[in-house]
Image 1 (tube, rainbow, N blue to C red):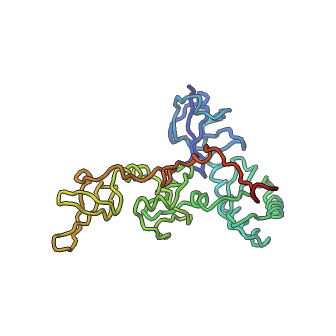
Image 2 (image 1 turned 45 degrees about the horizontal axis):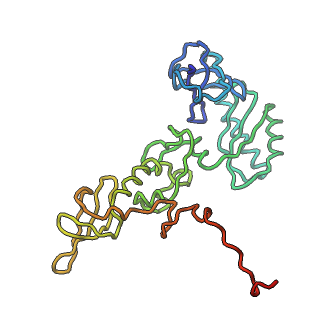
Image 3 (image 1 turned 30 degrees about the vertical axis):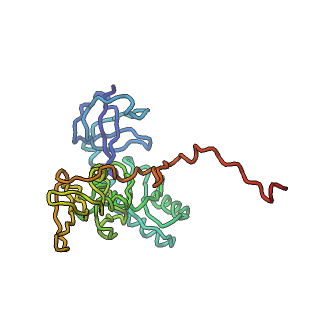
Length: 305
């Protein structure tokens, strides 16, 4: 077990572990820490805590000191310089006629390095731009191309729910999201409704996916026959969140009525479950063909060469 503190930096919501070195630190404090890029300012988001050795990425960097009044003043100066540098960045891009969108500028704590973040549809030859920026700022320059999801994470904003977007608030990394998740959750496939500020599928589609998968395995298939307290009928719609199913019932006069039943009130063939992802219609599973003995090649022309 090792004693560590959790530190979060300005442009990311990922928490990194550092050795507190007996420095009295608590959640909410600012700290100057040693990183691969040099000294950086970060916020303590987790006080001294014992964690297992395998959860610590070696080598474990150290906290240099608790942030002082001078450090906070330096951070304010850096923030002002970042705004000015962003304007210069925009001007230089226009001068060099590059097809790229500036996103953010980040100063190293000691001002020795400036990182410029941008987005672009493809590769951009920015070598001359780097030279121009280095000459202007007299510092080490790094241009870093990021994706649209990283752009949204940096800039932030409000999602369709009215809350700050998840990637800005608490997501430390992006998980895969697919259109299949929206289908399984019976969400409209209208791109404007399931896309986030970045234009990609919303990350929150994955939050309840496991629950939907579990419930869909328990519920009858759409179009299948079920027995209800009012007789037999066909499934029209499943409502996994409330564990209810909408059923179409046929009346004696040939007309139909629709009723919603709780899952426990229905009787149906539970063997008719959706097939596993790696199983095909004929029962053959993915990989079975690879295990089969390959066929001998047929001889052409009656076996004559």
